[in-house]
Length: 479
Image (cartoon, rainbow, N blue to C red; front, side, top):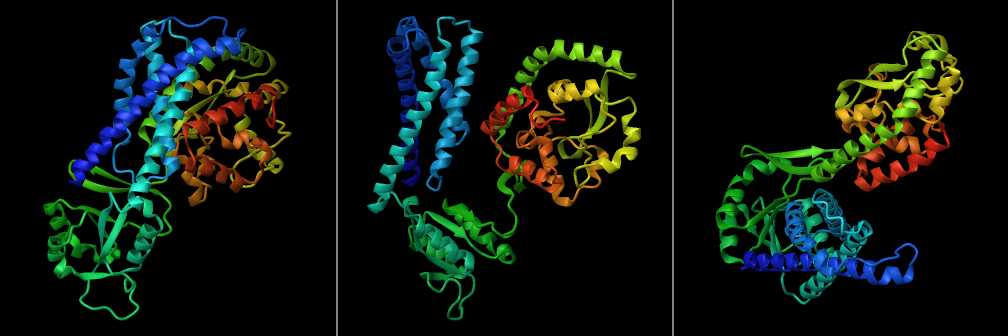
């Protein structure tokens, strides 16, 4: 019954999501064709082709949006999902779908499709999609508050986890869970045991009868990690009877890594990872890296060629500097830069070590005598970094990420410093746009890199890239 009800709700949501996307299509056409030309005649001097031309996008929208919504798990049970998660889901679907739609327009050379129209469609799709989800959440809360559409839950384990889980469920009544009681691992417990304030349904020996005599929708295992071996029969029985089973996994309370369940050829693995796990967003990040590095590489071609020629004319040595750096998880790669120091500057590092203005393993000096006059100019506008677009194209770096250390710096890292290697290094990053070389404390630098990893999103990358542009143009903070 509940499964059938879940499918019905999922079908309704799917229909609502597609309806909002198609409504955004027609509303975007109306805004771009009628409203904007009247409000801003100079910016939009003409209307659009007839609506029938734009309805060619309806079919692709249905296919693309359906694929994305199901791929991102939009119709799995989202009782416990927060509003922020819902907004992120809808925005991700709209953004990714609009990118595919734009590629389709360019690929088929549908020149009758207005480019501003696509941006308006994206904004409206996000607004309408979020509105639909908000309405559904409000209705669901009212229904569950009235005692309908709830799921009954049995907690297994007389532990503090059971009490904490019960409190969490009671505090979030709109989730629609109703606790039947707790199943104790032991026949008797002293007064004041962790689960003493919860209804007791029985012990593990009585668990089969409890499932048979009660309408149980879900079982949540809240046992201590040392008791897991005793629960194989509980798992098997729930599986046999079709009862959903959940396991509370806060066995390592000080671990802040994201937890996910994976499967290797039928073998389930519990995965702890401190890096972003959104595969689709990471694929889009790589796509953005490739596209922008090609565009920026083309724009920088002439300045790099001119700079390289001037470097050869003004000082002895090659125009380009190559250095071994440590990339993702410490993988060595060769980083390319325009040479801004005298030839053989690495061998002279010990002579200027006393000028270091940073603590920790890095060396930075405002008046480094190894830097040539031309090199100072090139550094000021970050022209020396342009060859790294080749590293980005090769996949050794990303446009945005922590800066790659040298092997000599890496061996001096503390354990917590090394986590910054868990994402690809970048040409620019949070450190650069937060003051760049003005930040002299090495630990503060590391904390900024870790904050980037912990809060990563495509939006954050775009924000950092946009903040990098004025920093490069005016040479702010660069030396």
